[in-house]
View (tube, rainbow, N blue to C red):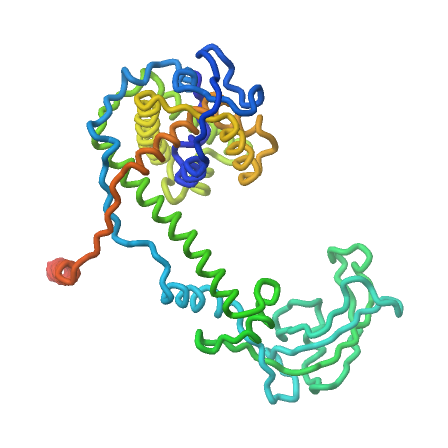
Length: 420
């Protein structure tokens, strides 16, 4: 088989979404099935379905019978994925305000352990100020061990407005060789004793945004607009993933698929072999490696191999169906679009080069076919009828009743078991 498996593009929802996001624009003729499919030889040509499918050594139409009406699927969503004002407020209250508290001065005058003090400090070595040893308006919590030994303890008992000289020594293993083991003096001015205050949504002001989030925003409106834009993007991604999942489920349920002889086994063996090599690379026993890095799926070799088998069986089924759609719809791709995709993918996932990326996914021809498969999936998704279905109160009540009934039954079973 020409295809070696690392992690199939078709297995990854994020990869599929990225692939599907690239446009399809036909221009030119790429030639016969004997032509090279390298995007480097043509800047803007068309790769036909026949050329794309030549990346495999089987005729996919012999292994897949597509369901009738696969371009007329229906998908029901339980949300309209619209960003409401409440959603923006909830996000700000949950993910921003607790992590960006407002610092306010207190009326305390003497520093105690646990206090947060606002300080200015200057560090000197042999009477000369050293790099990175000075700051103004720094908030330091006493007892946090943020600074070297003696710095924080040396401020306990200091009065607000006073200046303290701290004679300290950097640790021998300090990261800076110039300072490691050196005796220094920190001259510290205690400006105030402060406390962090988490604001409510209604208390947010432009002053707060500027003081706490000034690197990002200068007004409340700017912050809220950015949060709304982020949520819109996030919701759209979730909506796409939900539609994609439903479409794939319907395709798998409605199409008839058999596997080319030996293909699934080859892929399973390849993943297991790669896992064994990874374990050896980290000087770990195979099962210890699995228990460490795959604990969410398996803790033993047998469980891991079952997981790999089931996962690859599903992904291969999806792949063959989409290949069949490429053949049925005679999908072609633009080499310029494909080149843009590869460049974006390589950059986003940090590959050393396009060649490394191709090697990871079984070669350029296979990546190009995977790209076309995702274009096929996008086409089916775009053709599907999307309906938003809101749950009725009656349905909610029924669900709550069923849940309560299940709880009661569980409690009764536990009581019976206890009596036994």
